[in-house]
Length: 125
Figure 1 (cartoon, rainbow, N blue to C red):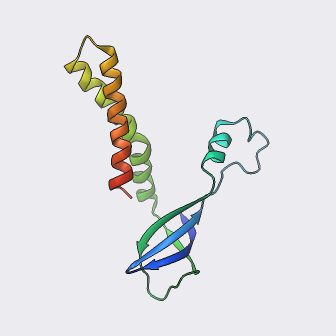
Figure 2 (figure 1 turned 90 degrees about the horizontal axis):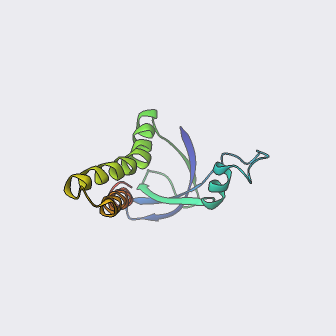
Figure 3 (figure 1 turned 120 degrees about the vertical axis):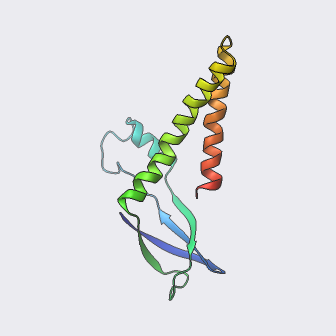
């Protein structure tokens, strides 16, 4: 998968890149009532992130980066399945610790879910 990015800033040995997020359903007539269309309107805009500086580039240049299918699958696993697994593992572990309290089991599952999201945000950029 290839994507074009604009270099908006160069700091030390890092490039700050901006990528325009693409909506999957720009042309669909059901965009207003479809779940994917509604969600895409909430997350429209652009993404900004840092990558190591490549030789010969300057601010304002547009570069193309590629991600392998294997890496894309691994990142999708991290972003979608890891929080879901954390939710179930947290609930199962708390059911062993607190077998008679459903509220605590639910809260522990949600806490594990939230912690996995924080982990992904902080450590897996």
